[in-house]
Image: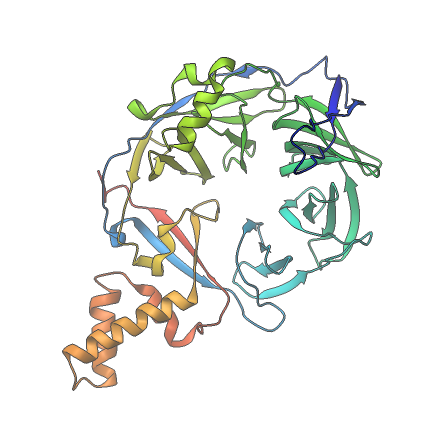
Length: 438
C-alpha cells in the first residue's frame, strides 16, 4: 500500500504569520492486501480480575521463595543500570543504556564478555534502544533506532556478525523464525536522504522477513484504521515470549487485552477486567479522542503498563487514578492476587518496582547493593542501640534469628561476603505467594 510521508516540520519561531508547510512523499512500503495475519480470535480468552483497592501486604509475605544472584564485578564487567535483561539456557544478557553496552554473564553470575561498539561505523551502533537474543542463529541483536538498523553479534564471544537494515523506527523487536521478525514500530521511516514521519502508520505490530540484510514487511498483525478504538490506539513496549507456547505476547496502551501472536492469526489470550476502573468504549471514538487525552492527563485512564510471563504465572502492572497495582495471575486455576502497597523492605526495596524480566519459573527483580548496605547499617545501629554490650557473635545471632529467619531479610547475608557497596546490581528471582494476600 502507498503511505504518505510527512517530512519534519520546520517552524520559523517568532513569525506569527508563517504557517507550517507539509511536504509529502509517496512511499511504497509493501503490498499487504493479502494479509494472512489479520484474523483476531478469542477462543482461548481468559479473564484476569484487577481491582484498584487500598491494600498493604507485608513484604515478607509477597513471595514463597526468593533467590539472590550477585553478578560478578570487575573493571571489565562493571556497569550502571539494568534497562533490559534477557535469559537464555546458559546466559544472562543485560542492556545498560547509560554505558551503551551489552553485558553477558553465565547463569551463575560469572562475567563472560561485553559488547560496547558505540559509533557510526559498519559494525557499531549509536544508541542501543533494545536488545534481543536470536536463538535461531545464536546472536545478540542490538536495535539502533537512530540509524534504522539492528546490529548482530555472536552470542558466543560478542564478535560482529551482520547488520539488518529495516528503515523504520522500531520500539521493540523479536526474532520469531530463522529470517522473520515481529516488530512494534513507530511512525517513522529512514533512508540516506530523509528521516520522516509516516502519516497513518501510527504504532503497529508488523511481521518482517529478511532479504539480503534488509527487512521486508510482509504482514500487519493488527491493521491500522483511523477509528479502530482501543485495539491499536498505541502499542505499549511489551513484547514477550509466552513461556508455554513460545509465541509472542503483546499488549496495547489503553487496551484491556493481552494478545498472543500465532503463525496465522492474533489471538486474544487474556482479558484484563478492571471493573469500575475500565476505560469507557466511547472515549476511543474518533470524535472523542480529545476527551481521552484529557482524561489521560488527569490520570483518569487505566493503563496496563508491564506484563511478564512464567510457566505458571502472569504478572500485570497497571495504573489508574494515580494508583499503581501489581497483580499475579495463576494459570492453573485462574486466581488473581494483587497488592498496591507494601513496606518493600524485603529484597532491599527491589519489589517496590515491577520485575525487569522473567525466567521459566520466576519473576526477576533488581536489587541495588547500596540499598543493601544502607539497610544493613540501619540494622547494626538499631542492634547497637538496644544491646550496647553485644559481641560480634551476639549481633550475628540477632540478625540470623530475627531479621533473616523471621523478617526474611536474607539479603543482609550478602553484605558479609558476596557484594560490596559499589558492586553490580543483584538479580532477585521470586515466586509469588498466593497464600499471603486476599
